[in-house]
Image 1 (cartoon, rainbow, N blue to C red):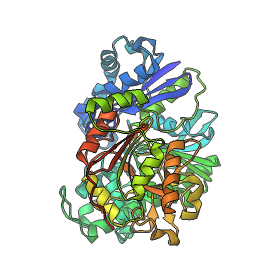
Image 2 (tube, helix red, strand yellow):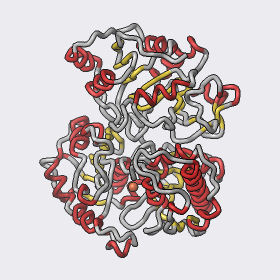
Image 3 (cartoon, protein in one colour):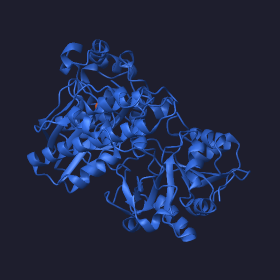
Image 4 (cartoon, rainbow, N blue to C red):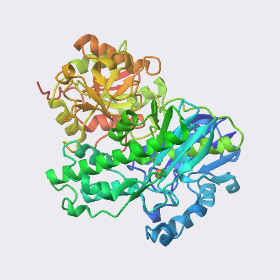
Amino acid sequence: MKVLGINAIYHDPAAALVVDGRVVAAAEEERFSRRKHGKRPLPWSAWELPELSAAWCLAEAGIRPEELDAVAYSFDPALMGTPEESGLFDDGDTMRKRYAEMAPDFLAHALPGLDPAKVRFVKHHVAHAASAGKAAPQRDNAVLVLDGRGEAHSHLAGRYVDGQLEILAGQALPHSLGLMYEDLTDHLGFLRSSDEFKVMAMASYGKPRFLGELSELIRATGDGGFVTETIDFAEFAPRLGKGDQWTEDHADLAASVQTRLEEVLVDLARWVHEQTGEKTLTMAGGTALNCVANTRILAESPFEQVWVQPAAGDAGTALGAALHVAAELGERTEPMPGAALGRGWGDDQIERWLQTAAVDYERPDDVAEAVAEVLADNGIVAWFQGRSEYGPRALGHRSLLAHPGFEANLERMNDVKGREQFRPVAPMVLLERAPEIFSRGPIPSPYMLFVHDVAPEWKDRIPTVTHVDGTARIQTIDAETEPLVHRMIAAFERRTGIPVVVNTSLNTAGRPMVDDPRDALECFGSAPVDLLAIGPFVVRRPVRTPRPE
Ligand SMILES: [Fe+2]
């Protein structure tokens, strides 16, 4: 069975392909179109499809559109109420519904040869749920979808038993933890449905002194759902425009909302544990990218394990919808093999890109050693290896790397990327060394979706990646699954005694992550980076970049 999954309705358009129950390809449209998040989540963009990523998924597997058994579209317009019924009073929903209804025809146009009758609508939160519960390695699990909105709900609680979803609760709109957090993002001068992680970063600078007031306005209801009353954030801190300077009040508001969100999520997790008794909780939905909240859920709920879909936002619904429909068609689906499901190139192909660009390049004996040497000398490295990753995090295939031992490297990395200075950068650490350096969050943590405490004796050794509150958002590197990255960090450790490198996504501010070799060369050409390690090759910048001591 060949099932193509499509996410298109709001944002982060993406495509995924499941063949005979296995995920063989998944990619976000932004990596192809080079437009961050693919499109704005506006009603009049709801028709736009992930045409480039869908075509690539099919080409990658050598499948023609007419050979597909089904296309799974991660939204079901029949489940959508009127703007009044949802309580959101969003007139644009009428247009969204109409465009979603027409998606089969749009898809048949975008993928010539596809029979529009093969398009199936999948409830948005069932698609999110499948992206967690059917993609996780633990086949039986409890599942929480924590989202902004679907057709008529903002959340789902349920369980997967032998691959079958049982829905236990769903919070109806307009109550929505995700939309509430988006409103705050907008209030703080950031871009709604895009910059929520900046609010989480700002929260770590504040104190939750408005928690008392917010506890009334945002609360779990004891039946698996919750209430989010309309909040006038201006009562706590004045609205900010884009780029305005924020004050202690703003940081305290962010900290208060963040803390209240964590408390409610822990309540929701406890409820779904009570109902299911499962050992593992799986999660998806944009709110599940909140790694501070994820760590609290793991620490304070009775679940032994928490697995979060790395593409927890709407992009992941392409994968989830495809897995769900494959199961409907009788397939026994397999967990996802990892996040590296996007485009990759052979050595010969990469070398041709380098020859086309007419740059001097070398093929060192071991690219891992060549990179470690530059990093140990406090250079910055652009690292492009293997297939690109699905989801918003750089996980060692498209990364900017640096030495974690210099406090000034945080500012330096943010300058290289041209982005705000309060943004943290994250460590990659050898899996076997992680427990002595990091605690509280789960180990292994392969997808960088939790925060950990940095051991006191390590804080001064890795200041670049130790956040102001003493935490770090780590990615553990397993020699089995990521042998090249593991070898590179081990080579860095031999030179410096530190089994950690700084990892941030390979892009500059406002641009999608680098995906193909040309993107990598363009990024390297325009940013003060010392070395581009691309496949087995390296390109060196002839001028040494300025280095902090
Ligand atoms: Fe969603």
